[in-house]
Amino acid sequence: MNRAATTRCLLAGLAVCMFAACATLRQPLGSASWDGACYDGLRGDVGFLSGPDAYDCGLLHLDARDGAQTQIAACARDAVASGRPYRFGYQSLGTDTLYCDVAVRAPDGQLWTLYFDDEGTLGGHAVLSVRRCKDLRFERGTIGKGSFFASGGCADQDHSMFDVLAARRAAK
Image 1 (cartoon, rainbow, N blue to C red):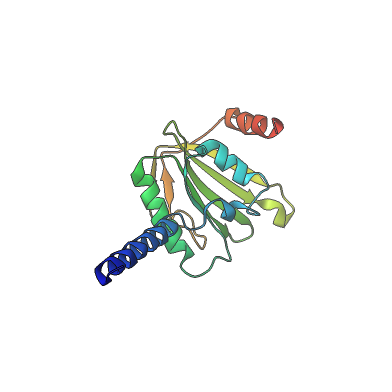
Image 2 (image 1 turned 120 degrees about the vertical axis):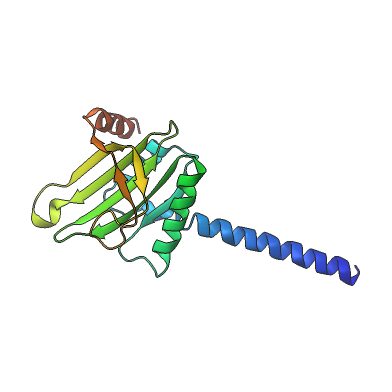
């Protein structure tokens, strides 16, 4: 092989590696980051609502490495702009409890937020709030560390979504 052909092969290989690195940054943590977060069924619930082909930006954990929030927020912006289904969120600590705030766009275009508050740390009961929303903004939504989005025009749902999620779990 001559020098020009070798150079083209090396450049092509480098381009493939750079593309793979960029793809990894866009979907930084993916489904693995949902494991062990907030409540046992969170990964399944957000996967069910968003569908199998959703843009999975992952869940930012309290102990996330430096730069993870920047990566997840960038992925979330790309996901929202894509018009595709998506899922992303963060885990944080309020004044007295652990909580998770998650945004999901379903395949039918509906925007959902799931907010889990683990009141168990004070002897209370954990609460899961499922809300249908009209918009999402990339700004601080809660006082907690890691907050990078806020939802708007949200309405609490009746128990119909809880029934759907419960039926999904029971079918397993």
